[in-house]
Structures are given as C-alpha cells and as structure tokens.
Length: 146
Image (tube, rainbow, N blue to C red; front, top):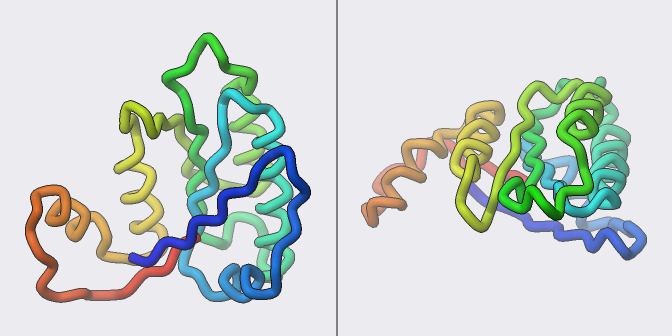
C-alpha cells in the first residue's frame, strides 16, 4: 500500500498542485482525517472532498473513502461535535467514518483496514505481518491511497 500524505494546515488556503490533481485521479482510496479539536479542519476536509469528487467526476459515495475524526482522546479540547462529522459523512455519502486517536492508536488500524477493504487491497493481512516483524513474500495488489 502506497500512502500519499497531503497534510493541509487548516490556517492556510488550499491550493492543490497539478501533481496532486493527478494523484487524486489515480489513487485507489482516500483516508480523510479531520481534527476533533479544530473546527476549521472539518471545513478543510469538506473542501478537499469537494475537490476529489470534482476531479473524479463521479457521484458522491462512489469512491472508497474513510473519514477519520482524530484526537478523540482530547475530550476537553474538543470543538467539533460527532454530529458535525456525521453530517459531513452524509453529505458525501461516506458510509465509513469513525473517531480515532493517533496518540493512543485508537481505531487507527481499523481505519486503514477499512479503507484497504473498500479499495480492494490485501492490506489487512500485510499490516498484521508487518506489525509482527514478518517480511512480506508476495504482494497481491499494490494499493495507492491518499
């Protein structure tokens, strides 16, 4: 699985290069991450999703996407309500959305495995092998996600 990390600072404008547009056209799936402690990040995610569907020229719900609302461990600092995340997921017909914490590793594995499943990749078995320190013998299908 190849992963293109396109971290976008919520305080900057989103200006996608033509190279990113090409990646959007060719990747197998998207893991869209927003922060539960930054309401602007939900707006940025909305803008990116709009861009993805515009470039792909496909109906909402037809692209493998997992929406991860990160920083669920920071309950006191939360500025984004779960209902707002659900609303964004519904807007783009995203069936797979969940709360994650990169700090505590809560649902991180689940998010990647769900995306791999949606994109038709054999990532889950490979990830387990990598976690156990085993080498990967045969690659079934190379998966590219953004």
